[in-house]
Length: 96
Image (cartoon, rainbow, N blue to C red; front, side, top):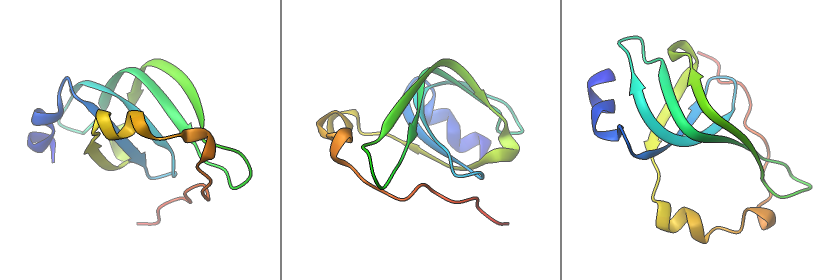
């Protein structure tokens, strides 16, 4: 997986962790154990009663053993989303 991440460096990515959290940020680097370094990052917290809350984190490191999914974001589409109107169940922990 690490070699596949090279094309994402300096691009905006969305990361889903095994504990169900969603982080968005610019991938600045990674290592062989998939520890990820995000710059200008935030966490999106989903709720069924309020819109999506974005918690600003800045520079953030995510441990590789907690990474479930990494994907590149389409910033044009993402900027058109009205996060205040999105309602969703929070993700649950991923069992492996």
